[in-house]
Length: 439
Image (tube, rainbow, N blue to C red; front, side, top):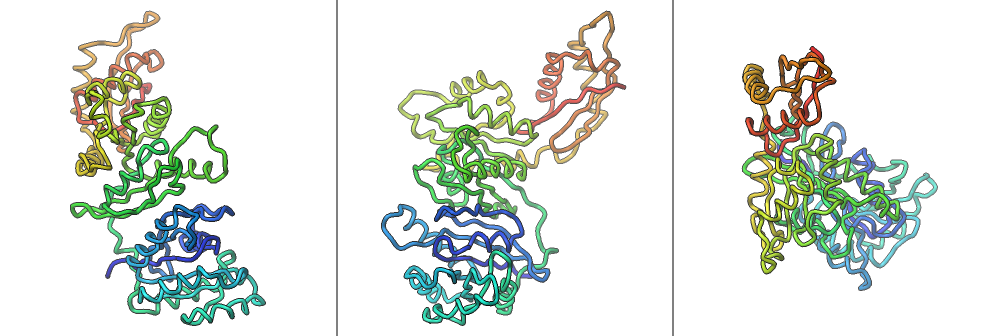
């Protein structure tokens, strides 16, 4: 079958786009909040209707005033969404009635020549259905009363869209499994959105110098050398105590959630600020969750006159957090595109690594050599013997060691085994776990 259909939801702020988006995708993907204009970016998700899969694009609310610095950007986002979608749900607010911004958007919908439905939201009970009357004056097709809140009329909207031959949806059997997902994490303003834009070569996330512009995680799908790659851009992770409003708090939970959903995490660090305590906390969290990781030192172009070498920068990082030496580190600039082309190939290498477990025979030959080189010290008059090992899990790789007195193996000895494993096998970028068991 053909490609999956894309439906864009457009409308001015607070008409209920995000509520409908969440209903269609069946999960809390957009952050819904009473603050006007929370959704500033295009946000993607997927839904299903009568066993057909489709993608949904939620866009920032459009306001035609000059006060909001996001306006030009949001307008561009809506135009992009209209260009890339197959069908449009143009949402208006039945409770508030007609608004001048609705007429601006109606023009855009007409010019797009895409199949659309004019959905009048907040018609929550049958008595509200006369709320559609003022919207006939927009000169579009007949308005459809819906309720994003309780779902009334939403099926009619999808039926109308899918009746059109352009919108056939995609059967779930067609979805390709050969794909990697990446999440981009880091403190606010280290340039995560710029990295995302550079990777997909499109202005997808709205970038501005206000900390915390990206409030949602946005899933972007790209094709790279025949592979499908999903990039989950996350809201900036920040310390819990700094979170002043609910949206920030919810976004930070989202960032952790996207971290869990991805195969490889790109940790972005600001070259000018260096590796701070906060970065150490984020890196520890990624490692604690057993994730593969690639570290991107962004804004490297700004250090040109500072006479600092990549080697020195790395050494300072390792001094702060020794485990980082086991993960690839790329010095990039989203602005000048320096080494951006290496990011996906490095990430794919880390993703593909260790598809197969390391053979038990190979591991046990390694164990004999490693223990012979430096045997565990006898403790409490007991001689400690590591008898056997095996890889018991693939992602993250967990290596189990069987021993007569597991409790007597010291942290220092576990660190020795860990370092030797990494030196002997290609585990760069992977987080590995060791488990010492009785046996």
